[in-house]
Length: 347
Image 1: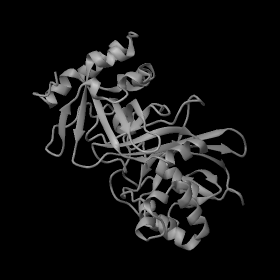
Image 2: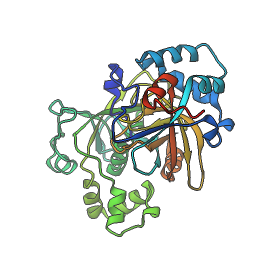
Image 3: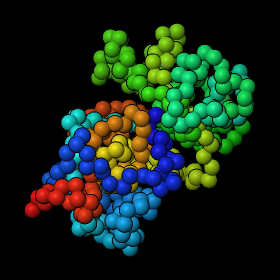
Image 4: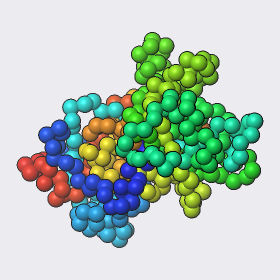
């Protein structure tokens, strides 16, 4: 799943607010002049998104900067005066992907058309403790008839991809929209079914996308079922109430995400809530200041970023096209940066 995994911990104030200076990663301080395209970005847009979550961050340095941000400073000057760009490297190449909030048709009631359920987490499932695999859950019917159904949709493949994204909107046949977010998992590791198709020689890596996987599974029902079972992870959902209909889904910091400004990262290396400068390669390079507001089980590594693209099918298409290299640089408060890199002043 792409995001939602740390929502409960973050809501309780347990989010890490500074990188761990462990031996598994190196840290170096850069100049803002080293950031390609820095001067051309919309820094105010990034500052607005930073303000959505900075109050959750508990370190005194972050709290002081949040208060300054609330005073309405010049955005670019704010970042350049009070932060330092820190390149964090764990030896793995940078990899950027994209994700989005799916929008499905469905119903609160089962019918001939809507017959595939989206489930709440059952009471016996404990977060972090492995439970039944995806295959075991689906073959055993262990969730059926227990009143755990949040809604019913048309296609089980849609549920699979909803679980990967971690949240979504369901336009109900009876009227209205049901918003669902991450509600727990079976504690099993995520595995990429796209990579499995590449391993089997069905497609080459550059051919694989969410739509390609959907189409292949629908053309090959039996093999498609086995393919989806390769991913043993199974995600449960909860109903999200009280959100502005125009707001994005709730991310790991328990606040709505912002399209093309919110980034999912590995919180072992990057503090949730921190500004992150990204430079992606590929057909449509991106040079943008984003805010680390989400995480996910597939997002692992100091140079691993997942860009949130918004809601609906068009956002899904754009997200599915991103499989790029590049680099990401974390903007850290000056004192935290120099605590990590005592001799790191590039001046």
